[in-house]
Length: 614
Image 1 (cartoon, rainbow, N blue to C red):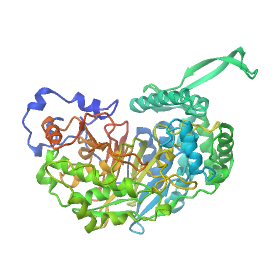
Image 2 (image 1 turned 90 degrees about the horizontal axis):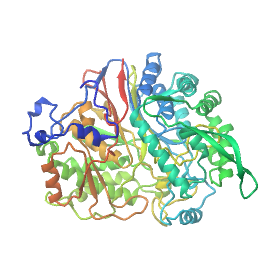
Image 3 (image 1 turned 180 degrees about the horizontal axis):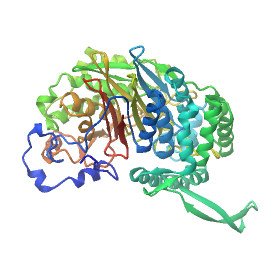
């Protein structure tokens, strides 16, 4: 039990192994037992939380966690550890993140006794207009949506700028030392576990299909870096332009879950960053390589877009829930969705309703639907929208939304609702001996990103611009120099004004829903940190979204198999359209500072990560 139950393909397989007819028919166990059977509706944990008096880390890969702990042991701050771990994850988990993507961070600083937020999201190319984007969308076969892959989906990556901004304020260890472990493993080969290997293979199939359909400008660089290494071995005739065509001998590079993966191009790129700093990426050789590559393939991102990029320090938005204060980052991220959902739920006695009961789940789902409806209507780059999402958290507005919930029946689609948004992301958290705690999330968005790897740089550019609307007047409409709506959200919670919990759950529109479920599990159902993440989850999707799509009736609710069949049936009777588990329920990491001032760390059993401490 302490070694955990590894879930190869996400939650659905993990739950399936624990299901049985006899367990379904068994009466509920004593809730004080705390580790009931998976389908009984009782609490469940794959292992105990890690207890750490001096420092802790939880990431989506054991090597990244080990790297963070090494930094902490050597006197680095929690920010130093987070940067080192994030760099390593870009090598060993490119299916979720990398230096071609964006970054969002919340930091508790013990020196000033306050929270700091950082929005490291990049903007769209200034040389691409809404009219040009619409033409590209039509050319790609879907005139109503920004293409999911290829050059039109690319916005400026903000991660490297974020590393240096955070390091300047909170770091202690030289940046070159923080990047050194990743550089070494990128040259020598790093272990890739089974779940990441599965996502890796899925990405190859998806990108090859996009290229075959003519929706991706080129794929040779991605193949060479991530999928297969090919060598020309002999001429095989000539093409229409008279150029020789070669037969190729290719070696597959996709990890199988039992091997090492090397990325020497990424090692070279990180070495340039280690010696040249932020400017190496945004104003130096890396930026010029990206510019030349984009010009060669007919893309829009330019050197000037990179050179003008700068992230933004922001104040987290916080809202009370019972005896804790939960904090998220403001838009262009979706963090306020979690706060709005919790504000609606605070008036209900979820503890009395019971864990995984029909009443509790129905109430949570309805509150989620209302918050997502507002997300579709109001969220976007605040520099363009002018809308303050704190208005969604007022007592008056919360009461209005709450009044729409009936205990007997799922409401009709509320004004503005939301379609499922899938994204591949990494979340990590670190804490040091001085009391600094970091909540960091980073992503290339869908899959490994746009499918485009600039020449010899060893990383893929993000496809975050896919989340724009093409509808004129929409708060999230595409425009040059604009930040897209962002799914990635780190979270933090305070108790009595003091740091209590740094946590996050990666995975597109699952993120704010899972933030709510984690807080409810901890606060209303008294679970420990690991059990709160291992508990069966639900996921709402199927309404309208910030890209302008319309709702599909009341939407859908996917549920992991830990929810008892009788509860599913009752929810369907109330009008919810229930779907089976599909493995897309996010990836959780968390560090808690308990009442004894000691760290506890937990990680996601649905992924390949680990929690550690010392």
